[in-house]
Length: 597
Image (cartoon, rainbow, N blue to C red; front, top):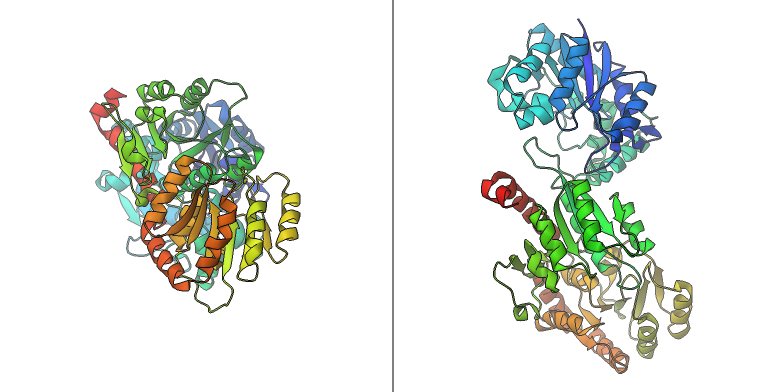
């Protein structure tokens, strides 16, 4: 009896573009899948079913190089591709194989096929009350495929996921149940590749097992996870998309660099990770600034579209949204992007979100999100204003919150964290060190020199010259451990001030503008921080006195810590991403909203 395995795969994955050929332990993801399928004793042929898109040309060439057949068809209609395979092979049994499942077990595949054929069934499943770690494979009969061709050609689930249709219509075919072996009975492991965290997990378990590429058995991997469940945390935050869940691309427009700092990029990376890993959207960053910011985005696995110098920003974004078929655009930028540009994007059907943006373009947003800063009530809105959300619960942090009590280890010299942002654009680090040198014996100081600070070596030398006991951290990957270990902080107002509040760490803020000073007052009025306001020549003369007073008053620090933790709980990225996904879902299902677009 002929059994044809059909690997459905494309290069255009939205969450991890190009993942089908992404190297994992030195071998492309597609190779891992083929390598395991070839170990099955039941499968007679292996076929790659991909699209006619030129983007998939390298994938088709790779499959042919690996010695398997290739059938190409519609980008969006997977069922049509399967029917094209059937027109060529007319096999009695097919096996739908997800191209992102590098840990499929050939013996278990044989077990499923045998159970289905023994009962002359059309589909096979495992008992629902027994956990099964195996995923990414569905054997089914040719009868089931022809049923879909006749009865479900227009069904979205059947077109995109083929056999998943029968999970929603179980009476349409005969379904066999195959027992799950004890070695594979495990719940909570993500074994498919959808996000960079999944790649990190796979490579970590391979390293622990000491196995060569493609040779880690699923049973051994499950045994390892039972022994060391901490490995599950590597990609445990990633959610598997459901068959009915919307997907697509969301573009995030932000910049970062020496001129404006890295706060916008830092918080948008946090939001982008949630949109990708938990809400299932592809996220693309649209940027026009320094290489340091681009490196941060690339390190998180996000594709970047870079605006050429001198380009018309509105026209560039419009072309990018068309090219990417973007469902939404999120703006956290201080560029000259205009209201008219965003209005045209909205009219084309793109859902436009603005984050902490008081410029005139706010009138063109579908959704405008703000922290509860004093400036907000003064903003005038025209008729037809966007949906406006304001509150500490919507604050997006750049790093996971450090939910710790105030440090109370009894040390006689409190630890003070000093950070002026990722680029210190106002060059405050050295003047701050000079001011704090007058109270050097009262505390220990950790200075952070961000990745965008110009002349970092000279800045370090100048800090050490005036404050020899300072500990200097150059371009740390994250401030989380430093925030966790400090008793208080001196920072330029921005995302770091919000992260300190979420961690319950009192802070003294310095502000670059009147707008920052007004925003910082919201923390002061809540009792969570102190502020020097907009920095002037006299500000650093006052800094040492404020720090010394707070160092000498542990009760006040504790009260400020309690007030700070009440403001921000660190779940803002999840709330904002969830709301955006909800609004996009409403637009998809509402005829009125679709026609308005």
